[in-house]
Length: 260
Image 1 (cartoon, rainbow, N blue to C red):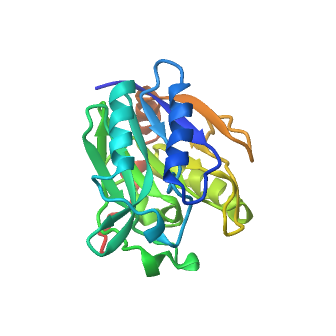
Image 2 (image 1 turned 90 degrees about the vertical axis):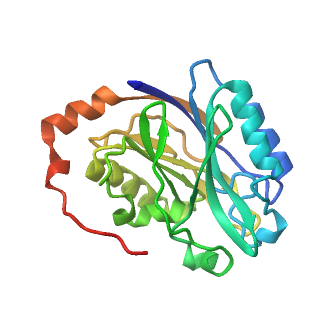
């Protein structure tokens, strides 16, 4: 079990529906990371932007983006996560991929599809919550709109950090800030959010606000707003244990069961 985990948050613009250019962009940024980074977090739909025409960019799990993630993770000996448009059979998924350094993959399909944009009409919603074990850290992967639904993120399984990848637009960014912080406080876990910046082809503007909050709701990153940026931050299990042992808030949580 590893006491510390070093992350790189990549907040950047995305080239609309162009997986080749976006993979090139991210590979350059990943190649420029300092030594010691163990996990790289990319935004939601990082190969395309938040598109409602998945047929233009969808790939199978055997496609180029998955191969690229595996090859890069192996070469750099890091884990890489972010969401991609994946097609299986006749269905499209907004799927978060967590690629380990050895090439193995954990997946999570977005549970709460964004009805305001019609995501529910073109993407099949996931039904399973996924807990990822990476170097002894328990990580809960979630996607964008999932952030508005605290029950889905409730820490009933002792996870250490929840990771949100997003295309969260600027007009509603105050909600992003508030909810990302709240998820840390109520779950006594690190809350990590990586959002994009720039404008997409549909005219939506994104302002970043990527951040990491500790178990007390303190922001431990210093990401600039409205600009491309990469930030490296190290999480500590000692921090989690200290305040869970001292405050014991999770002991008083309500019992409930989820139905999907």
